[in-house]
Length: 299
Image 1 (spheres, rainbow, N blue to C red):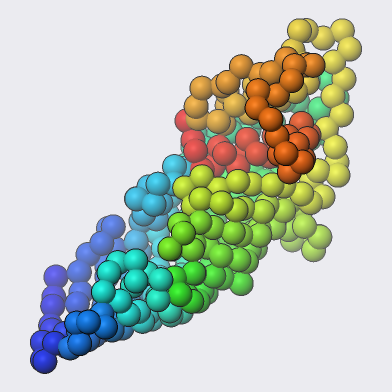
Image 2 (cartoon, rainbow, N blue to C red; image 1 turned 90 degrees about the vertical axis):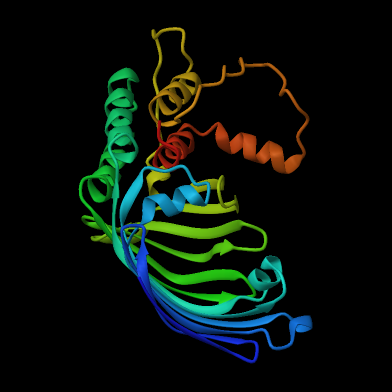
């Protein structure tokens, strides 16, 4: 570790700081002007992180996941305040990030192949949905994928308009609020496209608490439908079977008993809640929701 700093009249100048962090390196320089304590500290910081392991940082943020990889990050920031909340709420700046990510076995890799195999074998007529699942697995689950983005920070809200995760024959793009630091929320619109087709293969809208965002799905993958024929089948309904496969293979937690057909909901819902419940009944969307949960919340 190397540190060079000086203090003069309530102004701390960090001329150089070099150290290690998350298996990589950290370099920083900047200034903290606290000459007038009543108005808070005026802080400016230039920061660069090289080859930082992303997994521990996601866990620090409370995000359970199956994602590993090394990321480079740089940023130039300014903030002013006398407390942590004031500094976060006045944070402005810009920067970029890039690196290579990999989904660990037990998350997307294992989950996608198991769902495709189990669903296709267990449910007559559902094989048509395993091809899209295998396509996503082949694109993002078999080899490291490349991440790149730029971002801006405005009063603690960090946004990006050019998120790119390049897979094998497909890419995920995104834009929106990566993190609202004062509120600890996110709001992102993501889309997967295939190299030979510019139309969105799958869209994902994320919103809500950063450590447990809600996800809704769309795109061409759902237009394929999930036509399930259970004539002469066992006791499981299509909904129960989908939920069992998704929850058991990918959910990472205990599967809750499913509500029997015809039973009233346990709690009253407004129109918005009813619409969300109706969406959950779509087996294709339920499968995608399970896949997404398998990446972020592995068993």
